[in-house]
Structures are given as C-alpha cells and as structure tokens.
Length: 134
Ligand code: CO
Image 1 (cartoon, rainbow, N blue to C red):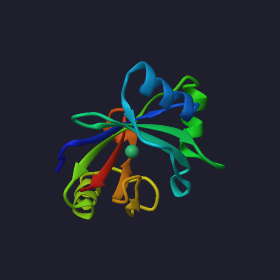
Image 2 (image 1 turned 135 degrees about the horizontal axis):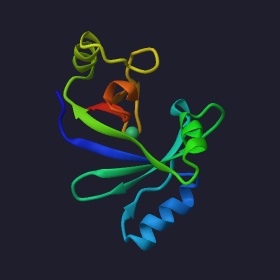
Image 3 (image 1 turned 30 degrees about the vertical axis):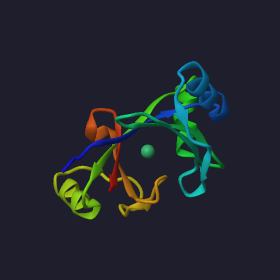
Image 4 (image 1 turned 90 degrees about the vertical axis):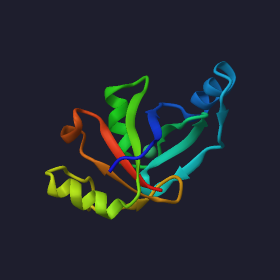
C-alpha cells in the first residue's frame, strides 16, 4: 500500500523564524509560506534531495497544531506522510483492518493540491500518519 515518504512534518511555534533557521543555518531550500485555512495551518516546505520537510504553524481558531504546540511549546515532529497510489482504496483497506481515519473519513485537498487523509495516531504507535495520493 505505502509508497515513498512524501514529507515529514514538524510543528513550529513561529513559521518565519523556523524558515530562516532552515535556510540560513542549515543552508536548505525553503519555499515561501502558504496558508491553508481549511487545514488551520501555514506551511513552508524544506526541499531535500530525497524528500521534503513540512514546517507547520497554527492558523486561525481551532488549528489542529495549536493543541500540539501547547504540549510541545518549542515544536516537534507532528506527522509523517506516505504516498499511496489510490487513496480511496487505501482508506477502505485500512478501515476494514480496524484503523481510524480522522475527520469525516473523506480525503481533503492537501498542501500539494492532491487528496490527503490522516490516520489516528493511536492506531499507529503514537504517530499521526498522512496519506497522499500521488
Ligand atoms: Co503533511
């Protein structure tokens, strides 16, 4: 079912200073900030040769990142995103296997304009998993 790691997402309290740190201290290529109101986040991507790191900061009321940052004020790893070829097929197989899909169970359009969904971290050893159809 799983393809490549599409990205690893890190929650950060301040997107601009995190982008500067990755760009200047680590010498990485970092995209311009993008706001995703339907996901309650602002994001930049650190572009690496083999994958991407997504830096996530809260946006708006009820952001899913806000509670995470309350528990981890300096930031931390928030989720890992795996690629799948067919997200609805993957979802149906996961649900049949007892995994829980967050939200209403239907894919949303993610930061790359492709369908994504999230799997409950308690079903995957404490790590939130994002699936992205590529
Ligand atoms: Co993500």
